[in-house]
Length: 205
Image (cartoon, rainbow, N blue to C red):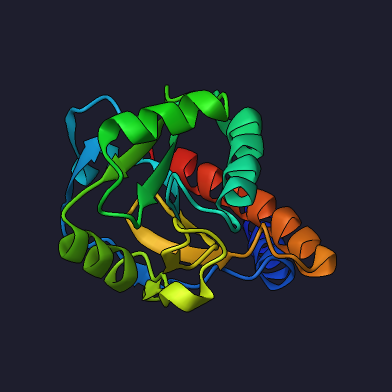
C-alpha cells in the first residue's frame, strides 16, 4: 500500500510539472559587485545571497518610461515586500546620478527603501555587469537632436529581472510595456513566478 501511495504522489508531481513548467535559467550572478546606495553607503551584491531579487534600470531625470517601471516595482514591493526572502534592486544608467539624486528620487515617488536598494556605480563596470549577468540589453546614448528633453540621454531596457535564491536569472518581464495586453501578461506572470521562487527557496532551507 505504501508503495502505491509513493507511486501516486510521484505521478501527481510529474503531472504538476507538466502544468507548471520549470522556469528557464537565463544567466547567473557569478561575480560580486559593489554599489553605492542612495544613503551613500557601499553595498555588495553578495549581501543578497539566498534571497529572491527583482532588478531594473532607471535614471532619476528620465523623461520616458522609468516612472512606470518604478510604479510597477512598487506594487510588487507592496505585495511581496513583507517577506525577508525578497529584495529589490534599482540601478541607475546615468553616471551623473549621485546618491543624493537617488535619495530624492525615492522621496519624490514615496518609495520604501527597507528592502529596496537604489544604487549607482562606475559607469562601464556597472553597465557590463547589468548586461552580462542580469541579462539587460545594452544602454544606448540618445543623440542630442532626438532628445525629448535635455536630460533624455539614454535608452535602456525597461524590463524587470527576476533572480532566484541561487543567483540564477529566471526571467525578464516587460511589466511596464505600453501595450496593455503585453503588460497585463507580464504582470500576471511575474507574480506567479515570484511565488514559485519563494516556495522553491522555502523548500531549500
